[in-house]
Length: 125
Image (tube, rainbow, N blue to C red; front, side, top):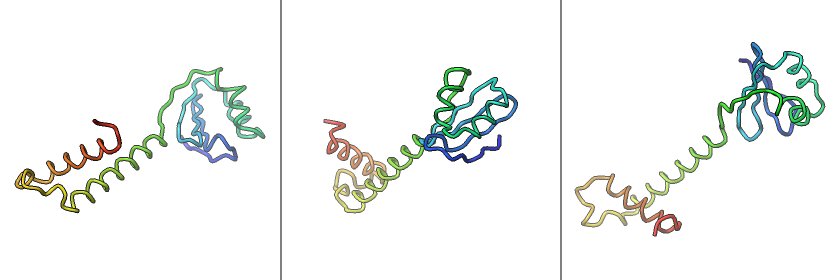
């Protein structure tokens, strides 16, 4: 389905095909709304306030399904990358290259660094 960017503070893109309206919100969530008449799509495109039009004419009137949440995926990726970066720094610093880890490979060092990091952050005690 071809998505079109729209001028809205709440909605980033909209698309329509075969009775399905797809809306991508600024926060990254993408929803599909089913059995939507084509004129609703065109009215949404023309609406001065797309967020208000959505709220009053679409939100609770059609069946829908959340199909993606790009923001969560991006947030998880950023957190994962920062954890890996921090683990690499700690391992490269040599603090996890003590006798009890020698010969056990990098995985042991990664686990020890991760456990220490979680304890420091208060996730583990």
